Structures are given as C-alpha cells and as structure tokens.
Length: 299
Image (tube, rainbow, N blue to C red):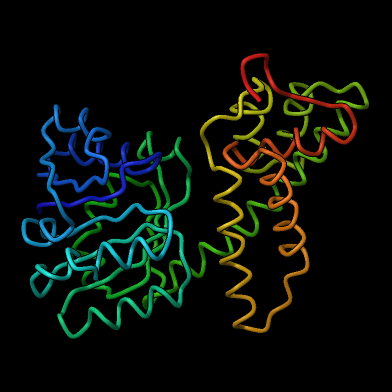
C-alpha cells in the first residue's frame, strides 16, 4: 500500500516516522517543505500538491487542524480528489464537526472515493509511542483495508458506524478531558495553598478515586516539572470544545459544564496561555491567588 500524508505537525510527523519504519512507501505534501527535510532524508518522497498524493498513492492520511484545510486539500483546485481513482481511501484524523465530515463524504461518493473520519486521541506522546486511539466512522470495507496502517500508529482502533460517528465520539472525549483537566488544575492550586506539593498531590491522588488518564499524564509531564510546552494547546482545546458545543446545539442538548469550561479556556487563551498545554490552566487559576508552577525557563 502506497501511503500519502499531509500535515506534519506535532501528530503528523511521528506518525510519518512510524509509517516509514513499517516499510510503507510514503509520499508527503508539506506546505513548508523544509519541515519535512528530515523525513526526506529517511526516504520520504515529497510532492508539490495534494493532487500528486491522489495520483501516486492508494490512501492518504490527513493530520490537519481545521475543516477548511481538509476541504481545500481534498476538493481544492489541486486537491486529492482531482486525481484519486475509484476505491481511493482518505483517512482523516482531523478533529472537526461530524456535519463537515458527512458533507465531504457525500461530495466524494459520486467519484467512489471513500472518506473515513478517524480522529485520534493520545496526544503527542501517543503519536511518538505508536499508541494512539482511532475513532473511525465510514465504510467498513474501506476501514478494514486501512486497518493495518492504523495498527502501526495506534493501540486501540474502533469502527463506530457511518461517517461522522468518529468525530461525534471524539467531541464527547474532549468534553470529558477538558473538564477533568480543569478539575485537576483547580485542585492542585488549592493543594499548593494548603502546603501540599504537586508531587505529593500526584502520589496520593493517583492511588485514589480521583485517578485518571489526565492526572497520570498532566502532573508528571507538565505541572510537576513546570514546563508547559508541547501537548494539547489551550487554543486547540477551545476549538475542540466549540465543535462539541455546535454538536450539542444541533441536538438541542444542554451542556452547562462544557459551556463553562469553554469560557475558562478562552479566558486563559486571551491571558497569554493559548500556545501552552491545557495543564497550564493550573497557572491561569493560580495567577488569581499567587500560585505558579512554572520552572524558571518556562511559563
């Protein structure tokens, strides 16, 4: 299987590395080719447009930040769909709206191009370790064809139903993750005011009912060392929660906690934390009471 990829950021670059190591021929379109130079030196073939990915590959993996970028890469003047043959598979890991995924799939259907919405969870660490979770919606036969590719990149792979279901459950995941992180950050600030160090906070709560994936990752990776570079940026969590709120509006479902969480993350982004990991909410909350977790070299 010849694999195409576009989007070589925090998630895309380590995924590209795993695909290469597994022996798949890999073609990459990068808007800034210099960012792909290290991959080129390892055997990646760089192309000058997404259309070249459609012509040269059997499937393409998208790792893009927003729906408009996805639409442009797929349906634009030099998009994948311009050259992709019938049976071609688009595996889209972008976190976007279910509605946009369904609309794109409908536009591709007359060309017999399969579109799978396949958002991922696990963060940069999961991408580097090849332990991502894939939440996939779309044609089951197309899913099975690219499942070997996903197995290289992830430890958990779920086919959830038709197009849109992958993005739908990713929105639910982001709601829970966002709120869990806020609670951890609020509590660790209170703990520090009580004279409880982040290390002790982590040691004890990780053995109690409060334990969670985010407690296990955000404390040792970010809060305890006081470095908030990398991870899932606050500005991206704002985007994720806005998607979840849009889904909720379409369903006329109340989202009281998620609405409040969105406002808090927006406030932190406006206060200068937009490019920090979401665990930097500990510093945002702490700023109101004289508590800070940053090391001298990081804010």
